[in-house]
Length: 255
Image (cartoon, rainbow, N blue to C red; front, side):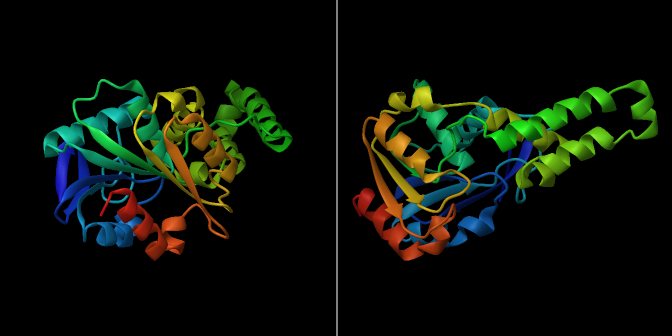
């Protein structure tokens, strides 16, 4: 089903009956990644899901978005569907959006509990390797932005950025690359103490996208948070341990 939100066609799913659950997906993912999770939870709850703009079957934004734009989208989705008393599940970038939205408060709906799965939101100091890459890009920008360079190799700067960037960055369109930069550079660590709902952290100990140390920080900083670690699992722990994850979520919801 497609609905228009903020001028964009957004692909969304509504499945099951019972207490309301809203799943916010991670960067670069789509419905197929979460289908099994949705199918499991919808056996005892009503699950809402939508592909984020630029991914799956949802339309890409016309210009680069930041976290606040995504929060506005989530609020509009909730308003349109008249959802309240929500169990909010955020994976990766979806967790980032959930954290900032809840930390701001003054919501027109109630979030009863929060589940963060390999959540993004904490910015780390750059490693020596990352700093070196940034220096190369900055130097390249100075050289390749000159008039002569633009005439000789008009796409050279963009190609350099793609080569030196992350896989997500290299695979994204121009608008989505700019969006990704805005998202990953916003540190939400200081906002964690303002998340005032019971919070469950589900994390793979081998997560290389959002390191397990981030889980420990969130457990410490979010007032009412509990962490469940998964040994040998990655950023997609809900795909690697589907039965275990579902049982934990079901128990957390009191089902």
